[in-house]
Length: 432
Image (cartoon, rainbow, N blue to C red; front, side, top):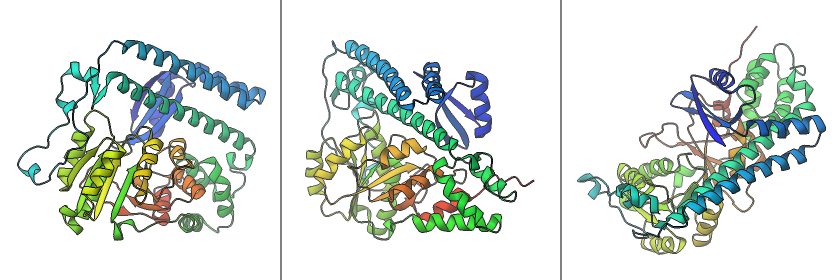
């Protein structure tokens, strides 16, 4: 499977490029906002097979059979890739280096640049044989795991598409805007354009039909969302041990750095610490050191739960310890951290523009109990309907949000009313 990236000024322009370049059969994997532009990721090579897997159940009314066929197709591709990859690495030797954790003092960062991770300064030959203390085979296994997670996400996206199609067949009132008055039709169309999940629309229709005007309908929807989504005042008394987890690219390290910086200004830099836990990406430790120096706090690295436990005993006098985690195999890492630090609070970081499938993948896990949900990329161009829909289902409280993609931006408290205000702001309502 090959992924192609499209950038355009808005979603409509991006979709036009997708159709022009790849045709109507193109499969959309992700839709994000990047530096004020719309980014769409398109999956190639498996488009024809995916089309067959989707069309067949619609014609023969056998969704389960097609899902199985698609799953087998994905498994076959992944199996071939895995076997080829493992064959290539069988002759490589093992190389390991570095210590389990290293303290980094903010005071020394003033006079010199932070020390880089050994992987950053290693030669290309060494990088090919080792990744942060692991041999090449272990690194390849980790890359295979990342690929598996991407494939699982694509399969979940397709499953949601099929569910939405089946649901839309039973909700003709929404598709034709027949269930609302002509005055309310522009509002319904705006919800369509901003990506409100189909499962949420039936409840919204009921609220719209009980409203006397567009303004009244928007107020009623905002109140309903704000009342139903709980929140916690995390910034009022942020102390103890807090774990920040989420998928790769959601901005965990930056969120941890922002919180460390704000709390260091309140408690003092010596009472706050930032730990990078088992993040094996090339340059991840160097990034954590840089963020820690910008926040003015000490940074540490722990590559196992045992080392983390030892490190925590040395940091027991600190008022606040923030733990940044890897974006790969989140469940395994969180279970290990929960066993080692049972009193630590766990926070799930989601991008405000995350798709329903990617956010649901983290929230629906029955073995993980989240203390709150944090949101990144919470800017004015985002309509976080998918996040709202899932929070209404899973009842996890909101805590904080961040807008700016750098450490200078402040972390702000977030509740259901502010989330609803963000979703309902700048709606593309076209009055006739």
